[in-house]
Figure 1 (tube, each protein chain N blue to C red):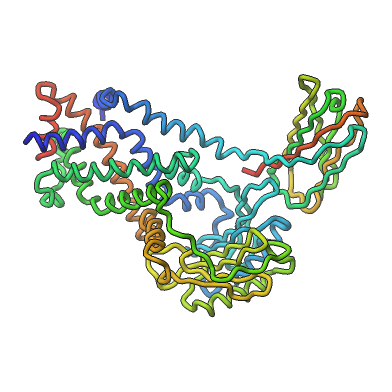
Figure 2 (cartoon, rainbow over the protein chains, first blue to last red):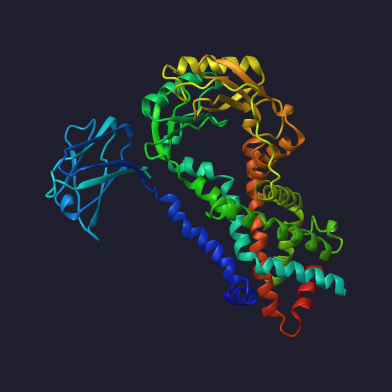
Length: 147
Length: 374
């Protein structure tokens, strides 16, 4: 096979080649979205920032699952907080919440890859009291499927 | 070549060329999809088991208990066993995130073998081929519309190829220039694929009608609905109860070979025990026995033969389109003809380019006509 006949055919597809190619490219472009498991967010409501919060969910979390906590609230209420995940593992798995935000509100995301099976009750603990005790912090929690 | 024949040929050439990129993609993904499960099987050791005698298979209840203990607390949606002895049984669970995960169990020892995520090669090929990864409401009509030019290419090709019935045993002239032997090969492949193009084209048109034009068959509904319970699956439901349910299903339909069990998702859903029986060319769900998981009473059953013509047509489409109606041998045939069909799309492009490149003195259609008419 030489390239020239293919080039000729390609040119002859004028008017249709880009729409047809677009269909294929859209398909391939959408594939990572289908592959990438999206976190399913569960709203845990809000709690006063000066309260030590424990959230529980029951289940069997397979190794490779990702666990994500999203907090929103005033920057001062979020700064320096730690989130710990505990389950059937000997030590709490801690992750720092990185603050940031705008318009007086801050959203902190923290993602953790579970290193092993966690069976039973999973406890998510907001362990450090913020600097702004009167502000409420909203919680959302997300689990990402193993690939 | 008469003006009419030339018009038919131009139509054949125009469709084949202009739509070739997307058409080739759909044909290639569909061809690979025939063996998509096997591709996953090759890549994931947890899906493989050492074949043993059919009599050594453990009960469905043992599979259930094993799957439950592997992934406690999560809702179990379905349990299925393959017809091929080298496959692990599959349990599909809902995860805490609302997604799906596949848990694999050895059907001869009931041992947990591991898990895989929901998205795999099979899902990629299915979604790419079926709706180009787009939302199904947009993608399915888009893809299935390609069945129309596919069927039109068959008709126009046969009209242009005079006395085509003489061409079934014309071996391509490989010693001649590429334009000649590729044209011969294109025609030979197309002739032997007529039946396959008709099956794929008609089933795709059916999918278009079913999914986009409101021609879907009514779903199967058991006669009696179970009374609502506290939970979708009763708390004390275990493998022993599932075995009793399967035994009940086999009494209700003695011909039933169970391949799939759907577990209730809502507190008033049935346990659905599905598989193959005496009806030909139907999906597993066409033969089903419905059971109330709370008290194990029969709430309904149907066989493939009980379905209405409309439902039967709907059931027919998948086994015919996928080639899953006759075991591995049929799937090999489907794969081979899928390769040929994909090859027709690709060789068509190249032949077009060749005849334009090698025949500058003559008009494209004249040159093409000579190639085609030989």
